[in-house]
Image (cartoon, rainbow, N blue to C red; front, side):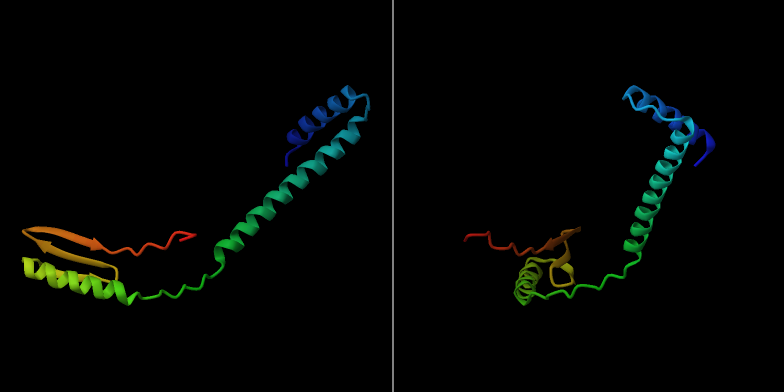
Length: 119
């Protein structure tokens, strides 16, 4: 908060109050300007400190549910692809299968969709 900021805000407040028919002294306008600028700076500091606290919170890793049905389907697809001549088949967790086929790299990601509400 600089003197220039206080003075410019004080002048603006002085003119606003005079315009509204409630004249104040320049000293009162300066005091009001100082209070307003302090309040704004404290609000900014509080917001910044809350953001910093939020970022430093340690989040617990959520446990992943392993879907055995997806794993079984991908293993069956893997067998089918090997029968068709796929090579270098590799499972990336239980939802994705990467493989080479006729000189190109491919991957299959299996997604289980949730039932729509009301069905």
